[in-house]
Length: 122
Image 1 (cartoon, helix red, strand yellow):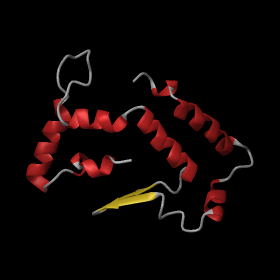
Image 2 (image 1 turned 90 degrees about the vertical axis):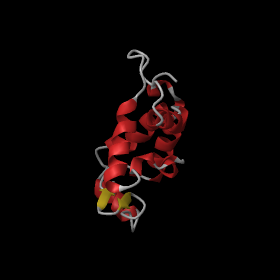
Image 3 (image 1 turned 60 degrees about the horizontal axis):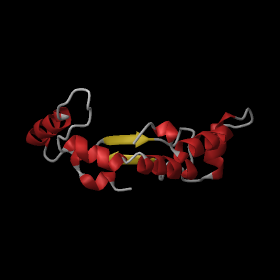
Image 4 (image 1 turned 60 degrees about the vertical axis):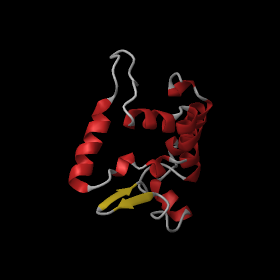
């Protein structure tokens, strides 16, 4: 895959982002139009909370980001990185840093969150 900028999803995201650049746009409008905005735009794992609700995004933004990931074959790239495949051809070696870190993390804390394939199913 070439650059993400060469995908139709990238162009769709650019067009979509224009609504957030309007001088009349306010982030508070997203909260007014979506009661319970926190729930769909946040993730938790154990003591970690990632809150995206206060960012310029909506359901369509997420759909477009997922489409961009799909067009860029992100799940395949993640799998390649975590299985030690060569992903940077200029170095001509496997990407072992993620594999090694996952092994260290697993030894200390149990199964690595980032290595769980179920997290990368779109």
